[in-house]
Image (cartoon, rainbow, N blue to C red; front, top):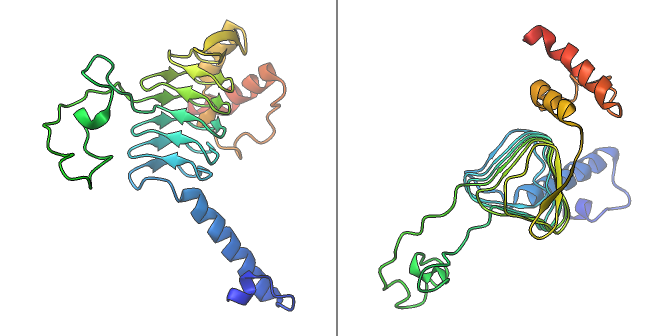
Length: 228
């Protein structure tokens, strides 16, 4: 088997199929290596090797890239595109206590050091979890502050520090991030919020004119009409 994985030149067709299967299996394991067992992924999700912490929730057809970190309790919607180096909902330290160091409320970092666990810890109340909507594009090296809510269809420009809620279909950027413009006019955004196309599967959207927004919304409305 080791010979097969190294690409033995005289391998048969069956052996080549085994090699292909094993490579796919290894790639899949690498993708999910850093996903917490308590995280909830709505299949299919492509973690891409990103670090996904406890009780995070990610919707279907969202994909992430290695080097990104999703903090505990974060919710991310469907069809999101998340680049590398993104930090979503990182924990925050208290700024009005004696120190900004976590030893005041956490024993985790130096658990093996004698005496480190001796002081009585004080409970640190953190901000609410971060919530990312559906169809959100987050660029490289964006930091989304804990507790922020990002609306459906928003775009967070690369390198931004997002410390305030982002409206649906807004394009934001900068440190701190500010609204640059909106992707569509108010009436079109309202239509997006009504039709919620991300509740459909790619198969159900076969034939949609994706590059014509008005036509696409008309088509989505016709697809969903019988269910209303």
